[in-house]
Image (cartoon, rainbow, N blue to C red):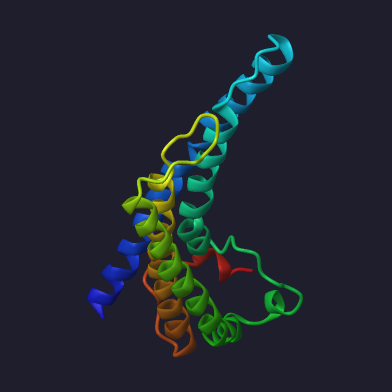
Length: 180
């Protein structure tokens, strides 16, 4: 059981670290967009690269934050009845609906990996006026899917522990759900 607890805490710590690191991407995205506004409207000289770079960075931000969001219960949830259920009943619902989660993340991992591999093989570029390489950004998708899959496994294990009356380890996913 100790190895399972170490695994659960380790995966959550990795997603915590990545989520916190990636959150800092908002600052350069903001600066890039403000630079574009300044260049376009005050100097009359729009750039060809700022919007595209901001979009690429936002894509990295959005997909890599998935594991962090899952660890903190931040994903969208239909909460009409779910929030009123006791902790054990919520864990049961989560276990039952985890099949859908794993199907989605499995498809994301498989197809995202396939697209990233094809993109790397051809050194894919964006085909815009700036024309940057986009294969590194596409490579982030399967990495993010893997991190989300691992956090999903942690969440499933935690829900099963709650369902069977076993105390989940501190420092694993979902502690903030129990008081809701």
